[in-house]
Image (cartoon, rainbow, N blue to C red; front, side, top):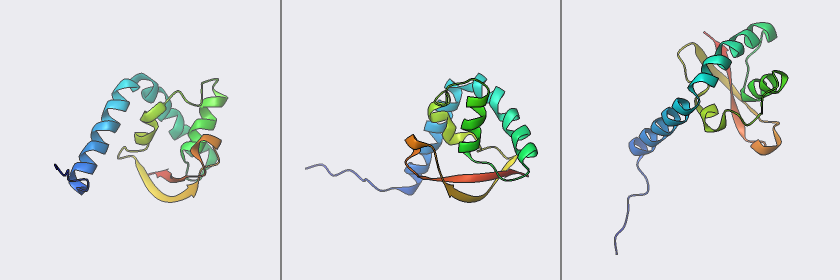
Length: 105
């Protein structure tokens, strides 16, 4: 019987980073359009924002709330954003999962 190593923090991080990079590459033009809009939204709301705020912004712009797909996992992973806490998502398909709240540095 061959037993795989199912637990490896370094490999887990590497797989996560590769998955995010692939998803971002597939949605590069959409991310390039939405990220500056999210910065404007943050400045307008004057409070930390989450993916729930970004998805609502997308709906307000006439976009599908699912347009980002898996690339949403890396939306705030830029040096200009700082994680400041967490909240529970109110999006039905997000199942009340914990999501990050971010502010511009």
